[in-house]
Amino acid sequence: MNHDFHEPGDMHEPLYVTRPYMPPLAEFIPYLEQIWQNRQLTNAGPFHQQLERELANYLGVEHLALFANGTLALVTALQALRITGEVITTPYSFVATAHSLLWNGIKPVFVDIDSVTLNLDPEKIEAAITPQTTAILPVHVYGRPCGVERIQRIADIYGLKVIYDAAHAFGVNESGGSLLRHGDLSVLSFHATKVFTTFEGGAIVCADAKMKARIDHLKNFGFADEVTVVAPGINAKMNEVQAAFGLLQLRHIDEALAGRQRVDALYRELLKDVPGIHCVPHPDSERHNHSYFPILVGSEYPITRDALYEKLREHSIFARRYFYPLISDFPMYRALPSATHANLANAKSAADAVLCLPIYPDLSTQDVTMVTNFIREA
Image 1 (cartoon, helix red, strand yellow):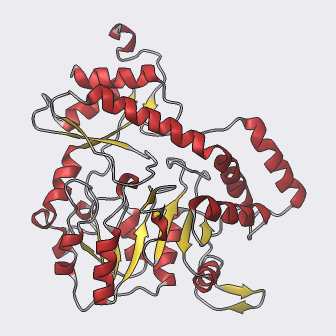
Image 2 (cartoon, rainbow, N blue to C red; image 1 turned 135 degrees about the vertical axis):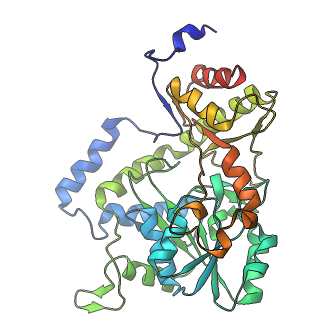
Image 3 (cartoon, helix red, strand yellow; image 1 turned 120 degrees about the vertical axis):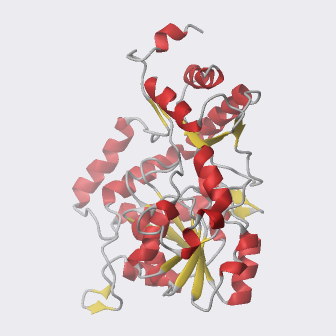
């Protein structure tokens, strides 16, 4: 391969960690025309209601409530279950996970991750439980399933609620069903960087109609009807344009997931014998969504993770150190007793080694090869 073409300043298209799958514009126009004719832009319009039904059916869940974004969904999920006190969570996630706790006046208690799955380690949860603990907030990191059965057993013993941050877990199945059916609630993100997107957006998955009604009240100022307010809700509703784009995305989602699977497999083949580059192994789920492609840069690699990160950026390959720094390292969290690096050794090690490479459905074989050649020849 002629690498001269890929020197800094060349004209090849920048490669980002991910980008949304964009169906042909012509397919979106009829949705916009319908919105224009309906003159209903928000407040549970027809596309909003249709998308809730179709997503619940596609994902194999009982009830799903749409939100304007995933962070509002997280904040509302905690409100819906009336969570207070302390919540056990992971430091290895996007900051919205812990921020949703602070917005509700809840104290995060960080627990270390498993060094293989990179998810909250179930074996370390019980030691962090105190009389003030009311819930567990794990994250299905990179769409890889948490130890859901072990976590649920612990929650049942201590009378705790479980809310899964499933921002990365759209369409993931395990043990014969949707990963989203576990816990009291699961929260999805439909941000533009996610496998399934509504520009911005999110959802809460729940198991019964009564909880769905409470969530719907909370996301709409607490209104039960035109003159009745039953809860101190917020404005977290998804609008009709977002919902319409989601319906269009859903028409192409299986094609998009297949494209991601192709890119994932190619990366693994091209990187399998590079010393010091460790591809995070596939989870044991029945269906994975390949939402990210994380590698861990080990000490046997000739340059550091950060040096590799910068080298790729020089060539317009915008990999991401995802998740670095740890949430527990940010100023609003680092004074917590649970935030010490000694308490979070596995999470610190992963954060210092991880690099997520570009992955999206239309990423070409040539571009994947280019990325891996840069890594191989560093």
